[in-house]
Structure formats: C-alpha cells, structure tokens
Length: 486
RNA sequence: GAGGGUGUAGCUCAGCUGGUAGAGCAACGCACUUUUAAUGCGUAGGUCUUGGGUUCGAAUCCCAACACCCUCACCA
Image (cartoon, rainbow, N blue to C red; front, top):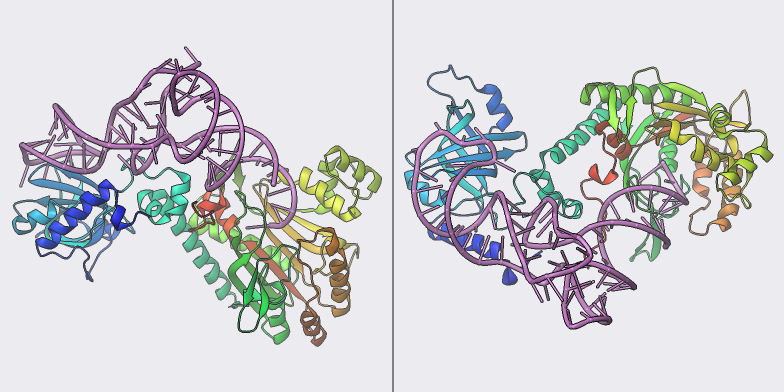
C-alpha cells in the first residue's frame, strides 16, 4: 500500500481535509458510539403515523453523497443494508464546516428524526453528527463497485463494502455454518478440535505442507485431514463427534481448489454409511430450506434440483452406463481408458477403473446423487460390504458434477487396517510427492477397539459454492491465497 | 506444471490495419434546502504492468518477465 511519504495525490487531498478537521477541534478517528440501531431495524420500526416523529441512531460508511448546497443527502451503509441521511445546514449550523469536509468512504454516526422525503424515501434528518473515522483513500467507483478480480481478493476489506452481493454471500456462508453446528448439536454431536500440526499427515492421500518446530527441532505437517484423530476419539468413548476446520494440501490451485480449505468430518459410533447418507441428505435439505428458499439452484450452466429423495446409484451401475463397458471386463476397461487418453500402463486395475469413472461419469451427475458401493481396493479406510467383500461400504455425493461429500462405514479391524496402510506405503514410490506413511499409534488405538461407526466428510467451501450458485471457490473464501505482488 | 486470455487516470471502461491519450464516475472550483448513480458550468488528472526489440514513429507489432482470469493436469 502507498506509504504516507509518497502518498498519491488523492490521499494527499484527503489528508489535508483530515488536518483541517483536526484544526476545527474534531477527532477524525472517533471513539465508541452507543445505542446504534441497524439500518434494517430502523426501516422495520419506522411508522410515519407516529407523532412526534420517531428518532434513530445509526452508524456506517458513506457510500453515496449528494451535496445540494445547504442540504446534503448521504446513503449510509452498515452491516444490515443502507439508509438515507438528510443533513440540513439549518439543523447542523455549528458542525457544518466539518460536515462539508466529510466525503465518500468516511464512517460517521448520526442521530435524528425519521421522516419521508417527498419522493417517499425513509430519511434520518440528522441533528447530531459524529465523524467516527476519516478515510484517506479513494473509494472505488460508486456504481460499478470494485470489479478487478485481483484487487477484490487482495483488498477484500474494500470488496466487502463496495459490493453488497459479496457481503451477502459471506453472510450466507456464516449462517449456513451456524445452521450446521446447530443441526449437529441438536443431534448430540460434540464439536471437537484435533491437531492441525501433525507429525504424520494421515487420513488422505495428498501432498502436505511441511513446517518446523524450532524448540523440538522436528518437522511437522499441516494436516491433510482430521480423520485419524477423530477416530481416536471414538476409541476414547466419544460416540458422536464432528470438526469443522481447515485442511491444507500442497497441490494445485483452481476454481475449485484453495490450498487451505474448510472441511467438516462427522463420526458416529454404532452407525454405518447408510445412516451417514440419511444425515447428509437431511443436513443439506435443512440448509436449503433455511437459506435458499428454493429447491432449484442455478450453478454455472446447470440448474440443480435438490428435491428429495436423492438418487442412490451403485458405482458399478454408473460405470457400466457411461463408460461403454462392464466394470468387470478389465480388458475392455483398459481399452476404453486408452481411448479416453488415460495412460494406464503403470496403474492397477482399480486405479484405471476410477480414472475412467472420473472422466466419463462425474460430468453427468448434476442433481444430487449418492454414488454407493465403491470397489474395495480404492478405499483403504473403509469396511467391506458384508454381502460382497469386493465392495466397500462407501458413498460419495455428487452435486453439480462436483464431489461434495465422502463417507463410509469405518474400518475398525486393526489387522486389516495395518495391511491396507503398509500396501499403501509401498505404493509411495509411484508418486514421491504424495505423502504416505504408517500411523502406528492409530493402529494401536484400533487394537484397543474402535466401535463400528459411520464417518462423513463434507467440503464446506464447495457446499457453500453450490448453495450460493458460486462457481469459483475464491468467492466463498474471505482471503483466498494469492501470490504476493512483485 | 502445460495451453489460452487480460493488464490504459483513484475506480469502471473505450482506444480500428502503428501516427504521439479518451469517456463516465471520483477529485478540484462555482451554483443549488427534498436528492436517489442528483444536476449544470468550469478545471486538473497518465512511466498505457515491467524490461528489451522492430520502426522515422509503439498503448497498438515481436520477445521476455510479473500478476490475475479461464481450460487441463494433481486433488476436495
């Protein structure tokens, strides 16, 4: 940002005004301002019939200013919306000099009578005027707001007040997360916090960030998933737990990927993936009901219909339907994979199958679809199906072609888990960047005994994207990661 | 990491096949006590992202760097 010594011309002009305000004995950076009512609350309480006229106290930022000489109209924005102020020289004679020095972007507090203008606009006819904060930088253009994507992300503090729809979207995110917490709390789930800094980054196959603890002189990993710690809590006797917090993955950035993202994981003892499916559907339906008001949401080119019940389709059925071959006919699968441009030479059968699935099937899953019963070998932390041991009791929920939730009946056999881990660790050579290691203490925990359980993970950012019709993850994260300037 | 696009005044944007920089808003000055993106008149505002090159001449053409956006890859 511009430093005071080489301040831009606009900043200089504003700073001069600031000095004049000081010379008039007014503090341009005010103090506490009590009994503030929100613009929205003032609108709601207003009744033109009441005599004497109602009064109101309001504070906020000046976003529009119409100076008509001895009368100034200001549009003031606070967290709830906007309200018009009328400042007349007659009512504010003693403060008029200071008032004439305030401008767009300043933060002020006012008190006065409520009334309507002759065009019917609710207006606070200001009698007491308090400058709360002088702004010494030019605000963005009043009509278009701040459009430059880079500036919007780098200076979100401007984006938030210059573009009301941005504030609206983030408020929606905040409210949705609050609804999720209440929903789970009502059902007896404990919210817990598990380590973000881990000595072994487990619970997923992803590239971690590495950091260093000086006093202990050890490397630590920022977590890629909380899963293994939450399951330790099941061992400890917490039967229903969840965590909403950040995961970190040292991978590519895209409209659907930010290096740090908010993950929710839920674990319920004595449950299975069917129970997690019901929970997922009910939770998302609750969010839509409370915050969207319509079961149909436009997301990019898709119109998503969230009407219940949602489809539940086995993985193999979708595979056969869209991949042009039977999932069990490996020769045909490999042939179709090659045709789709997948280099299958070094891959196991299951990996080829999954690549082809991602390539051919995902783009068809627009309305909410639970893809159920995954090939067992793709799921090292999942319990196999009783009916068919080749399959894992796992589902992924797809909405608008993107994966929103991943859940399974948790594997609680320490011997099988150990075997899955060791074969996974062996495969590490194929992709050296991807972190795989054996969490021995987790195996120890399983040996003490973890109750059978259902587990569920939901990417909160992506869920918010879908429910707010936002196609770029950066528009639902307040401060997305950008490269530093220069 | 690969490919494509963008970068011009504080902000939002024009600027044609190369001829020396434009508008609206904001700012500054004047007028105005019921405006709604207030209005009218006037003024000022630029290392055209950065660095090279081609050319008599570059915002414009070429090369490179930087940042952002999009697509793909890794992944959620």
